[in-house]
Amino acid sequence: MPLSQVWQDLDQLFVHAKQFLLGVLPEPWRPWASMVVTIGVIAAIAPAIMMYLTWIERKLIARMQNRFGPTRVGVYGLAQPLADGLKMLIKEDIVPRGADRLLHTVAPILAVVPAMLVFVITPFGRGMIGADLNVGLLYFFAISSIGSYAIFMGGWASRSKFSMLGAMRAVAQIISYEVPGVLSVVAVIMVTGTLSLTGIVDAQADQWFVFTPWGLVGCLMFFLSGVAEVNRTPFDMPEAESELVGGFHTEYSGMKFALWYMAEFLESFAICAFTVTLFLGGWHGPNIPFGIVAVLLGMIIATGSRLPWPVRVLGAAAMAGALVLWGRQPMPSWIWFFTKTYALIFVLVWFRGTFPRLRVDQLMGLAWKFFLPLALVNIVAAGLWVLIPNPILTWVLSTTILMASAWLLVLANKPAPLARRTYVLAD
Amino acid sequence: MALIGTGVLSGMGVVFKTFLETYPWGRVVLRTVGVKPTNGLVTVEYPDVKQQHAERFRYFPFLVYDQTPDNLRCVACRICEQECPPQCIHIIMEKDEQGRPVKNHGRTLPKVFDIDTSVCMSCRICVDVCPFDAIEMDNTYELSSEGRFTEMIYDKQRLLKSDEYFHSIHPEEAAVVDQRLAAKKAKAAPSAPSQPGASPAAPPPAI
Ligand code: SF4
Ligand code: SF4
Image (cartoon, rainbow over all chains, first blue to last red; front, side, top):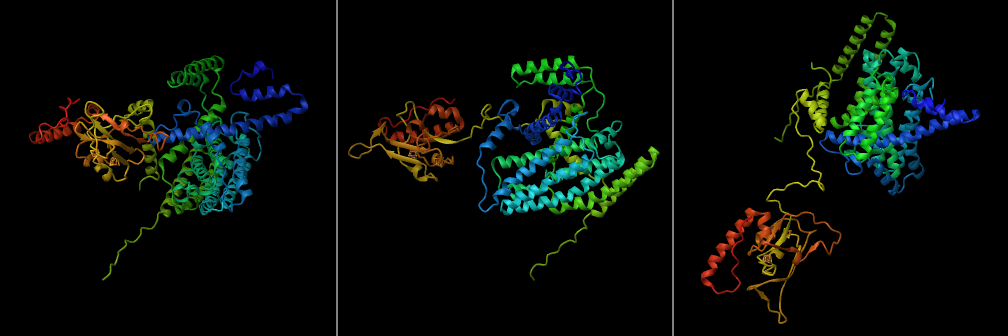
């Protein structure tokens, strides 16, 4: 691929750039170099994503609580993640007396590695996938559930009651929510007939699965189970700070603590990314010319009153250049993917801003008594969707089944009204 | 039966409205859809913007003098020192070699008058107990420094502030104090008309 062609197609920009890079090398090196480039890009992108997720989260949650969020370090607090990272790096690493030193160190690493491995099979855009495994979905579930080992290991190795309790809660919760999480995806596998994530995204070219009855239910269940699996509010029992100080990471400090957070943020990102891939059409999107985005972005950058002048001028100029170069091309697939993923991350933060933490029994009840049966019914609905060719009939049938069963489940799960207590005082 | 999850959704709606209210464009959006936005952001970005505090706001005591700094009202009676709950005032009276109190403008005066800023709890008890209205509350609050036993101990020089300053920060209170002092002077005047320097000057005009 000659350099002049790398710039032509915005959608394939990164793919072509990689091909160009590989083209420079001699033939026998290429497979290895390809791996190195992919691994390098993922290893570089993951921490960057995590750092700015913390910034995004803090900014959004602050606005939801009538605050500014970070504003002091850099423009709009944009250098805050760097400052935090530096602080974490130079902080003392404290291991409690009597803790299992080896496991205490291994646990956060074991949490981060799977979280990063998941990025390998995330389809970021058309042709932008680290490795298109034909059992990609299986890989995702297998890898992401390693995180629960890490959490338990960390909690156990800390030799602290809070950590231990948090870890036990975490394991109970993660294992419980994995069941409805996996079952809600079964519907997708039934309809697409493939475990490959590229295949699943391709199957959504005409219709995103979320716009089908089973897809909507599956999407909600997968997303909520995912929220529970990564221990985010309102399902953050394992690190309930009001009860357990910090849960499984109570005894962690410095960089190890940062690693826990990195794992958690990367997993949240992965959950959003996979909800997008499985139900929200992946990198597909309506055919909007890229020019509109370029103009909008340029306007935002140029009018950002707190940005320094050179940045505003350069940003606007870059956007104008992009407009000239790629203005008439459709919106690139990777922009669609990241837009949808970050929209879901907004929803995650929104949840955190809205809901109080669930009680342990409510949390378990939601997984076992509501999500699990509904996921099973959802599989039936998806089966009907595949079997019955008449579109109107399938719509009506699967919608009725799902709504009726949801309603029945809600009724069945209503707690029995407690008898009014009467207190007999001393005679 | 209400639809499942409506409560959850309306809760999320409230949060989203709060979120939008904090942005100017968000307020525009809210107005276009017919929701009346309030000003979401209440944060005052302190070092850049300072809040206007109420007139009664008080933080730390200071010693009042009339006209010149040596004409301070305090007579070193040490009542405030004894009454101060956290015991942060330290007073030594000005004495000559024979141990007799030195008089200036017809009054005894303190040689040392220290208040420890880091111990003072801004209770205003010293002001209430002072029989001479010699000590009043200031409204500065940026007193932090690194010298725990140097800069944070305010000595007499740093505590002395003029009556005009008192009028400028607490006009209402200063007017009351002036009235009280004038009444006292009127009472004292017939019995001791020739006491030199004891009569405080005419109250300065209220600012
Ligand atoms: S304000 Fe209260 S604590 Fe402070 S010096 Fe006066 S009496 Fe003591
Ligand atoms: S400030 Fe008032 S109470 Fe305190 S020593 Fe001086 S005159 Fe006495």
